[in-house]
Length: 125
Image (cartoon, rainbow, N blue to C red):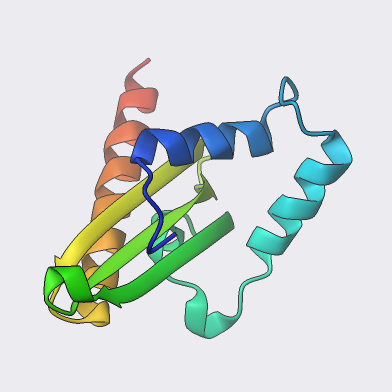
């Protein structure tokens, strides 16, 4: 994801195809991909996973970009289920961080804010 030309909306469309029964992908293929996205090594369990502690399927991307002066592009997308049973499809794309750690921190902060806000909104309905 780090060197691709994409948008957050593109990534959410991809996540929708992986989670929707109306997807052009078979249920078996969707389960397979989500299974891979759910089986993340502990050192790569960051990003949108900060937003949901219960059930997360994610894909992260990161790299320093020469065209950005060596600053880091850090992205994270995934399906997140929180402890209240809400499911969110989240894509956070960022760039121009001084370090990978700074990018991870920013991505996690955004993912937490988004799910907190959406959860509060869902609770008011």
